[in-house]
Length: 225
Image (cartoon, rainbow, N blue to C red; front, side, top):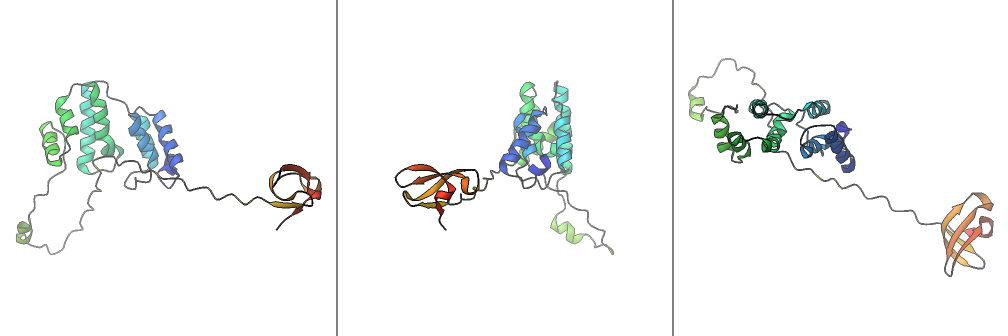
């Protein structure tokens, strides 16, 4: 169900997958729902199995030291650019869970929206951060070019700093209903079929004529093209 939700499932099916996962997880409800639903925005994510394992294996912090352990695990994944569920939603999880503990320094670090200031706060409390690029253009020009360039390591995939808002996928409109069959009767004239009971000449047809609605045997009317 979660795998389909992260693909091209209709909105209603994706939302159901999110609610189903949230019902079995101890994650904050809205975070679990968004993880399960996917809404087609998780192409940078690991497999659906990893998402389900993360949601079902999550244990809420029971003490301040558990909150710090969760923060350190999130910061390590985030700093290394690892595409894990914790790297994506760890910050939102901490914002929810820290409401139960008095950890002002950690709360300030996860609530800060300015990237530079957030980095400073994380360093100050001992959380890992991604290394800063220190090489300048001048330094690159001064450094001798090696005879044989080593294969460049693939850059880490960028992890969004915030969970994307769910994308509403409006279901396609139903196909238009077929025009009702029309019949002619020598006394009542032309009318549209309302319902039919049975088949063949003995079928009972309920037909709405201009003046009234009548139920007649099929052999007494003529179907119009």
